[in-house]
Image 1 (cartoon, rainbow, N blue to C red):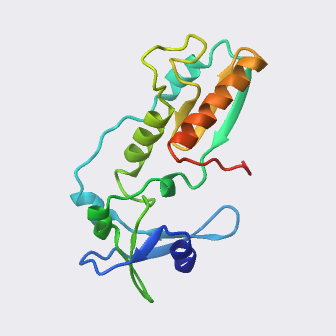
Image 2: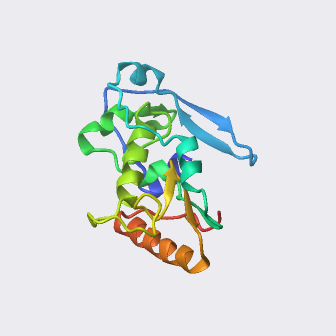
Length: 179
């Protein structure tokens, strides 16, 4: 798993004075996931309180829509870079050495806020004018790495999908085509 993370440029070798322990957790699919125990780091981290969307508000914004397209971002957090001067904080120890993340790992207390801020900004329209055909001026609703493109007509849905793809591409975010 460490070799795969290295090959995908998600982690790098480290000489950090930090070293969080790792553990393997079973996935629903039968495989295993490498998890880093960041509890000690999280206790000392200044909390970022960027809000997650309220599900009730998002459901209200879907009212009147007839067509829905659900999209999922590929390895969501791993698409967000960790600032170079903060990478040493993400260091974790394995039997084969010390590594640190170049991309946001799961388990950090601020990861959800950082990710939601990124996806919210990515889907914000660049124009100051709000498009009346869009839900609250956005082509898609986002909750973490899950997106919903909702529309009243099929053609409107295609336009919103195209706009969503353009915005995600402009933010260098990729979708999981399998989902």
